[in-house]
Length: 145
Image 1: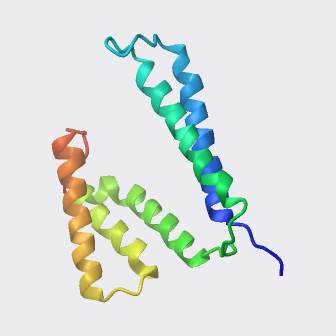
Image 2: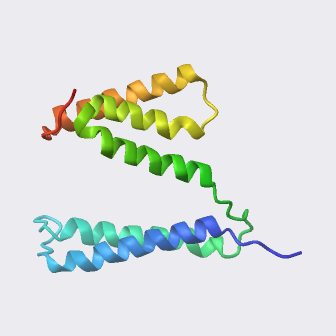
């Protein structure tokens, strides 16, 4: 019997480790400080090394664990990219609220949700996007057309 390694966890763990290593090494460019007087480099270095270690803890055991093969879901990828493009193209003509609503509806085309559930989820996403970005963070984005 041929063993299929848990490639999902191997790749995910190695990507986590790579990101952690990047932040830990790049954070050394800033003053580290100490635990009682943290400098700007303290947070990215400490969390970077933690992320690096957690990534290894995920990837190493997966090498000996059986997993399922990777199946690319091209439809989901297509609709995700299409929703990003829809948001980018509709943001300034329609505003954040309607662009987020449209982008969410496009992203949900690949799901098996009912139309009512899609509409409710999209309305919630549009409301949260509007509250967080132009209102909460005061980004200069149009809310409506």
